[in-house]
Image: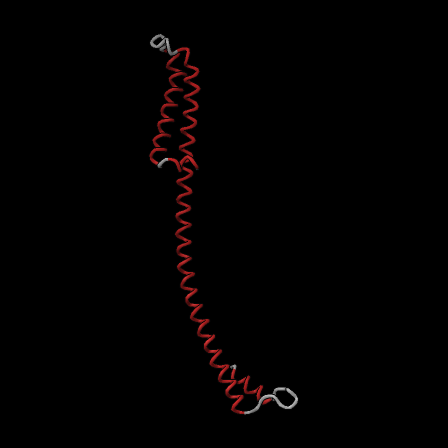
Length: 148
């Protein structure tokens, strides 16, 4: 949540505990204590409703902040595990990519060498295209043997 980006985790945690504690004390104080001991603090009696309302708001803000911290911590754990999995898969992918590059290079080299060998053999045999521009059966046979 955006509020967590403004402050460090300890400040938000402390703020949430303070809001919950002050809100709880204010609500309990205005609900029960002021009614029973109002003769001790008569000047606060007219403000008991306002103090009660502010206390409830502080209590809600404190619980909201606690929930935000809890939710953020859960997501942070999920993000860390996902990042670890991604790093592991990237390492595997890198090794597989290297294996594929080696195999591809080997296959390309084999095909080039073999193609040159077959072409050389056909040229040595001096058989290829006859007067009708068709490959002779012997040239096809040499080619087929060469690609096996």
